[in-house]
Image 1 (cartoon, rainbow, N blue to C red):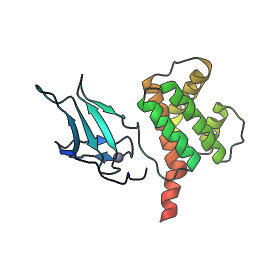
Image 2: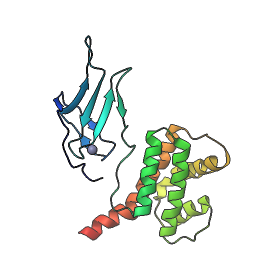
Image 3: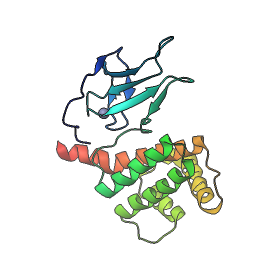
Length: 193
Ligand SMILES: [Zn+2]
């Protein structure tokens, strides 16, 4: 995301706070922003301005600390084709908002796209695509149990309503990240050199 050009008027100097900015994904530790103070006791909330993208994030100190907008789940992957990147970001957003079934359904879709990008035929079912990726060597030999878990996750997501829990969704996304790196990021990095 491009930097928000301009400057924030009358910012206060505050204690530095380290967080992952939801706007630009960077890990930052700004020292300026705005404080919502009260007459007695500590402050209620703070707005920090990201030194990387210049966008504000609100922290509320009621029942612990809440960051709004909350950081995106997972990591940024480089060299993704535009369409793939868009869906991958959507999956990360689903995960940061606890929308695990939606995230896994999108992950399924992305796995199919990766398979088709790697030469599989269009219009096949999910299991066929996972098998394809396995046969083509994208999945390591000792990753068989993992792949079976993903296959099951795929089936659950299609035939029943929300049975995807956090752990399963995280496994699926971890697997997806691994594939995206092998398929797009590594070749992209090699090509640069
Ligand atoms: Zn930022």
